[in-house]
Length: 395
Image (tube, rainbow, N blue to C red; front, side, top):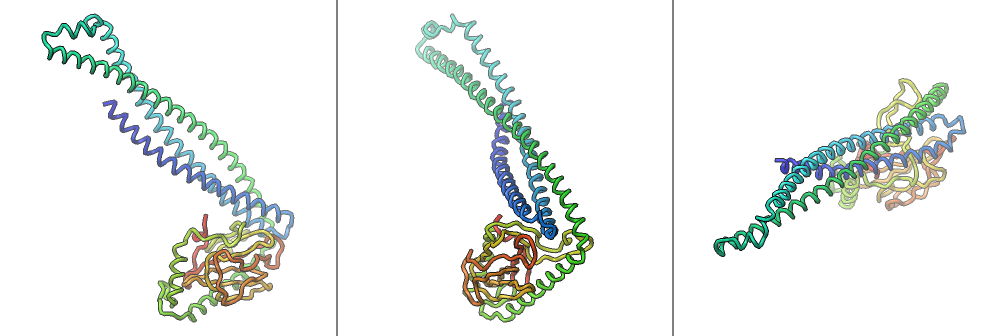
């Protein structure tokens, strides 16, 4: 009965350990990426914090830090939960092993005692030669051999189970140490989160004093996005071809191939800049620092470094270049039925009609006439269906 319980527990432990290793490695990889994101955000913040005119950008970067910091803390909690589960499984395996070893040692002790008490009767030669005939002597010989193998087998089982118990105890201690370390890391991250939230409150108070100017900037952004929507609709209306896409757009057979290839790269597209952080995510959300003011971000806003090169995320054709307020540009690249859009670009390196390759330089991210780090908007459209670019970019 104990043997069956042990086998069942051991199978469960082995299965959980395999899943645990996969999950814990994935969580640690995500945590490392999030911490790298925070590090890059802090680098950009150092470049803008000294200038009071950069409060909006400072707030966006701080908001980003808070979002990612929450992910780090959540990931640590998940790691601790996995460790708690594996510690409980190890405890069950240890209890079962200790019980089985106790039974094995007891059985082995009885065998040794019985052998000792009957050592004269079981003297090999006397016992065999005392047989009445050859067949009985042969059977006694086989019995003695089987008895010796049984003793050896019991001793080996005890040795194997003892080593398995030692290995699990070592693993248990390692897991408990990891859990203690993670609790310390979580405590440090919570303290950093508290500091980030205090910074956030300070930036919000300062921005509320500039509410009129911030609202004016938001209206300009809305106008830009509206202009882009109209331009994309115009490009779709002008598209001709024999192939009809799922979005109702006519394409040539070659464009259909490009479109299919693009669609297969969700979550794998390269970033449009080598180094940058998302300052505002996709979709409808509260405007940073303002009460009861919403903004519908058609892409993701990315803050990057001075003179940062903006590159195409996929091969395609430059279908439009639009002039924006302040002398900056928006570049639309067509990938079959998909469009990638790069807003607030200067020092242009392409022109309408150019076929561009993946990671080819388009231009440089610009300041949009304001102080601080360059910030541009990156969008992806499937026909006239606006997509969340963050889901398309590699993590």
